[in-house]
Length: 615
Image (cartoon, rainbow, N blue to C red):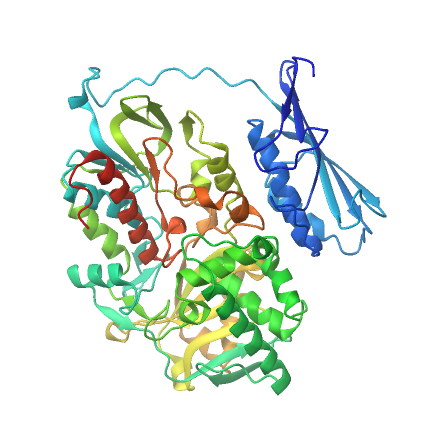
């Protein structure tokens, strides 16, 4: 091969007489990427067409990453699709999600068969990437220029959410007193954000809102330590259900909606199979090349749940309410492991003791982050300090540079930001390919909460507990988040997945109107919601950079966990990674965030102190 042409073969890709990609040095480096098909690292090709699309796109991303490029460097894509149906363009959704806002040239070529009859989709690409820029050395404005060890901090924590604050708390308890927490926002708490209502009727949680006192040991301990007034989720009364046609009915909490017996039996079978399969997985190290080769939609199809059926729609409510994703957008293994992290599907979905939605906090969940930050030494938390760069200095530690040009030097760094935010930080040296692939593959779905405040709990008066689920939307799930002691009567609407995106496209007051109309339908009173409506409160997490443009937790498409999932919690040199998405137990919840921060602190303490972690 010419010295001007470099072959690119990412680890784990098939070895062949040709390269997976080549880079030719001609000014801007041109990257030619061979056709990538939908197979796992072990070569398994699922029968599901959409699953193959996800895997092919992942394999394309792997070659780009190995070449030092990203999706935004793509200049041309060519898609080869077997038996292409222009009336059912299933590829478009997934290719658009892969590209984001990037718009390269694309050619679609319908074919009757690819090189292997099992392949249904293949994609090749051309990309162009400029030679790496020479980065100016970091210049400290916060510490003495003397490189003596005494001028270096022990630990810098990036992010003042619950995971970052827990890490800072524990390293300082362990004797590493020189610790700084850098937070991009003007507040602590990350995705715990409590705000007073304009009407003065109390506080609402724009982000995380529930804990329990049964298996969330860290959060209940903090609740007791900080004097949180806990409110049990109301499950007294009937639940409401809205079908495809908008028709509404009621059913008892803990039961299934009133489908015909055969449909109920099928839904129960799928629910119980999901529960069984998730319980069979390791919490920290889920392994199943088969499950990770499939979308959750393909997994449901295996169980006989056709798209558009009540069984499929019920499972879609799970993925929307828990992750903001449609079943076709998330790996079956990822969703099952997510369920497993919360004790199982049934426990994670439960509003009763031990469940994911059991207890709320009258003062608001941001109480925990505010109190944890206040418990640290004065000056530990620095607000308004987004991190722009992280540079590892061999034999010394790490330099962390903020967007304002301030530099902090420390022996260790704990990064506590969602994976999509890692893309906004310049790492020197760059993160390993496996970490980069994890960060670039992590996706938020669409997920927004809107709290509708009323002067009276009309749904309770009609015999409902407030819990509702809908196949039609705009809200997929509704819960009662009232605080009777404050005279605060609230229905929280969860706008998630495709129905949520459609709602988000509405303008101004139409958003609230659509929700008031829906809750009137759900609880059988079209007039009460409008007559008793006081105000609405919510926050578009999808527009917030420092949360990674989403909520509540990232998810992975097929193939990612199988290929690089083992690297999720691995440190890189003196940089450690925490956050609720890295948790074992209660991933995506406050409990998972705190536990992950404790893990990061333990890693640091084990390397910097002889005493080790003091948990």
